[in-house]
Image (cartoon, rainbow, N blue to C red; front, side, top):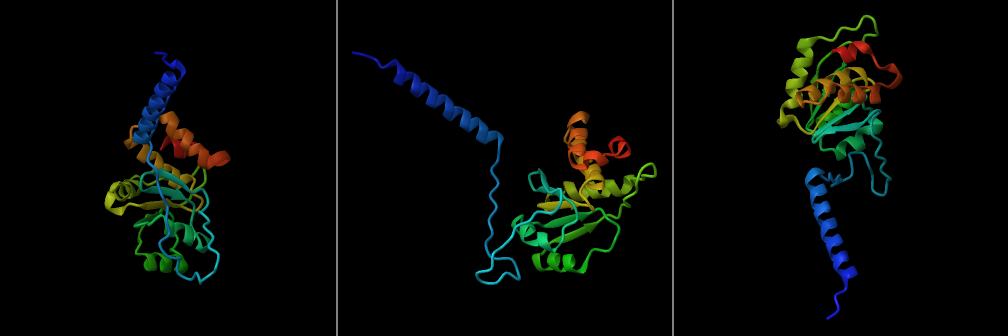
Amino acid sequence: MKVDRAAERGGAAAAAADADADADAAMCKTIEVAVSSPPAGAGAGEELHFTPPLNFAMVDNGIFRSGFPDSANFSFLQTLGLRSIICLCPEPYPEANMEFLKSNGIKLFQFGIEGYKEPFVYIPEETVREALKVLLDVRNHPVLIHCKRGKHRTGCLVGCLRKLQRWCLSSIFDEYQRFAAAKARVSDQSY
């Protein structure tokens, strides 16, 4: 009886590939975004545009970050199924945004942290601690964290989360700098 070694190796390779795929599936979750109905204000036959806010990214399962969303981002935000928004800006929340939150059952947590420029940066510890409590409470997930541009204040809160997740400091700084780019602040990173 003649044994086809090439086919036998192919079977072993396929089994190894299946094992790799199973390992990858265990390490990586697929997130499906589905829109069950058109967003409010979208008429029949009207083309929908899903534009994420400035500096939008997924931080972790159920946690997102961005700059300040506006009405052009509402259709996109609806696809996330948000339960809460953490706003780190002190200014009153715009009426259009409040209406969006109300019509979608999204709770707003506003922690007014001033957007100071160096060298006069002050990041209030107690305010960040309270924002972290809201962020860590899974009853508030999915949650969007934002400030004006999604760089400094948002970066500080995400950096604090990363420390709690036991990330090494160099990785926390790399993530911060990826969003802050040329405007990275030493004071934010030292916080």
